[in-house]
Length: 123
Image (cartoon, rainbow, N blue to C red; front, top):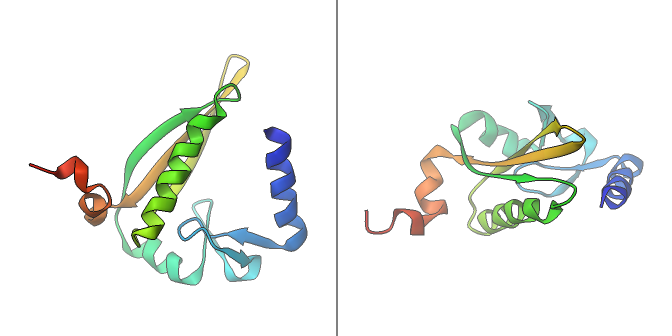
């Protein structure tokens, strides 16, 4: 898994391209702006600065359980199809000899109900 990730990252280093943290589209590095460790295309940079963001979903993953992180990326793709902006923050912690990754999905506060209507049904 780690080797595959490093190969994936090396493609971007050679090609001088990166992914926007919100729309997940690939752009030349020159078109992206880094803010708070996230890369944004020009349109999504405006959204990031304008909207109030709420941490909505959080999962933990480890080298022994890497599939845990896949669910949060699938959730972000679903949100993209609904035209709901989101981004994922990744934090790393070392716990003894194990690295734990925490993935947090952020969405605009005013779009939580639109993003997850089932959670608000019958309330």
